[in-house]
Amino acid sequence: MKYLLILVVFFLGSYASYAQSPLNKTVTVDADRQPLAVVLDNISMQGGFHFSYVKEFIHDDSLVTIHVSNRSVKQVLDILFQGNFQFREIGDQIIIQPGTSSKEKWFVVSGHVKDAVTGSPINNASVYERVQLISTMTNEQGYYKIRLRERERAAAMLTVSKELYRDTIMLILTGHDQELDASIKPAPPIQLSVVDINKYSHVEQTMFGRFFISSRQRMQSLNLSDFFTKQPYQYSLVPAIGTHGKIGSQVINKFSLNLIGGYTAGLRGVELASVFNIDQKDVKWLQIAGVFNIVGGRMTGVQLAGVHNHTMDSLKGVQAAGVSNVLKYGFRGVQASGVYGQTGAYSEGAQLSGAISHAGGKTQGVQAAGLISVARGVVSGAQLAGAVNYAQGIGGAQIAGLVNVNIDTTNGTQIAGAINYTKRLKGAQIASWMNVSIDTTSGAQISGLVNYAGILKGVQIGLFNYADSSDGYSIGLVSFVRRGYHQVQIYTNEVLDLNIAYKSGNRKLYSLMLAGMSFGDKKAYSFGYGIGHDFKLSPLAFITTEATSQYLYLGDWNATNTMIRLQAAWNRRLAKKITFFAGPTFTVYHSDKLDVSEPEHEIKVPRHYSPFDFGDGLFSWFGWHIGIAFF
Image 1 (cartoon, rainbow, N blue to C red):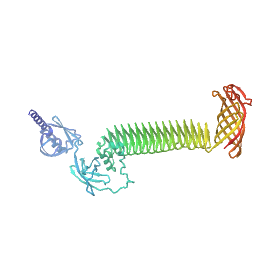
Image 2 (image 1 turned 30 degrees about the vertical axis):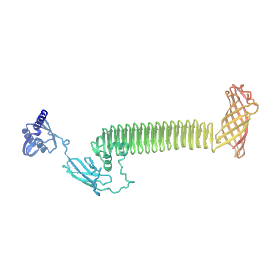
Image 3 (image 1 turned 60 degrees about the vertical axis):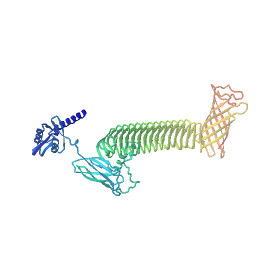
Image 4 (image 1 turned 90 degrees about the vertical axis):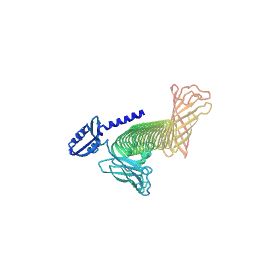
């Protein structure tokens, strides 16, 4: 009971205080065409307070007519100023301020949306006012309710939009709540192969779009795919909670600030977000997000994100992200990614990635990645990768830590830590393991192990060289030309009784692999390598010049016994695959253990020649060789 009395006293005291406030005091005013200042003085004298106001806003010399009896001061002031001013109480003072924006009047329009043919209620239809940018959607019963501001205009227009239906416009009178139903007709059939009903809603189909944009927002964008408007700015907390409300997805802004994330139609200025920006159409100039940006149209300017950028058209400018960048088409400028960068078409400028760079078309400029660079077109410039490069044509340089692959022509240089592969070479291939050019090679192949060429019209330098056919030069331990020069020689010379040599290459430059031995009580064995060249004299005769290097085994592998021979021979073809040859030689011989050998091996060479002795185990002499060649 005690607490109840306290509450009663509290409410009575509050009521008494409220009743004594200046705005709630009752007055009687009876004035015909009197100055406003006089009428206000009369009201203030009756209520025992006074007014304060700025004369620039209130013309107190204007004439007014009012007849009221026992009305509150607030009611009288609303009549005098027609609701365009607001009133504040401070003690025994009433301050009159212009403030129509804080005292805006609203009215509500509600009703149902039905199919004009079947009469069925239509769910998820968009109902919106184009000027105020206020919208709502119908529920499962087709019911909508929208709250609009009163304006100077006596009428406003509501538009009802729904995918696959015709837009319907309703004219309404402002100033009072009302109910208004709409019947909308289905749109004429469309050809999906020609008309894209999702023209500006692709962003909602992305992984981030599906996660951050609600199904009703996606439906709203689909309904309003033909309606877009422009505004100078917008602020939002998340999509649909901001200055443009649920219709913000259809607004193109000059400045956009999203405290968490935003979903708008496009940008012609600056857009900032702590987490994400999603724009349906083109974005120009500057877009920055803490996590990701998604643009449904073209990006012109600078796009920066902490994690991911996705532009569903082309880029002209700079796109940079901490993890990944994705472009549906190409770009002119720079794409820089911490991990992965992708374009669906051309790249003009620089594409840089920490791990993988992927270009869907031709590349003009630089493509570089820490691991893999892929260009599904011609690279005119440089393609660089820490591990693997792939291109469909090179006009410049392709450099990789492990493997370069070019499935078309290389007009330039391929440099790899392990393997180079190209279809056609017009330049140079340099690799530690293997170079492969399956078609014509016009240039140089240099490798530590193997070179392979289809048609050689340049130079091969490697341990093993192979060419299908050759009009160039192969330099290495073994050089084999499948459709080239092949010959087996059996011959004797002044040092060894029997020698066998295999020649491979072409007549410009061929290689020799040779071995020999001597018979009898004093044995000697030899093996070595050489190169040679043919000079054609006639269809049946030619001269060969060769240089060889041979090791001579005389019973002690620790001994160094080497022969360098320069030899020439006249060759005469005896039959289609049989050739006789003979000619002079000049030999330079060195041995570090001249007087040491096993008893059954030869100690002094040559046996029947007086060599030139230069001392320290170095000799030279003139000799000969003669034999038969096959093939």
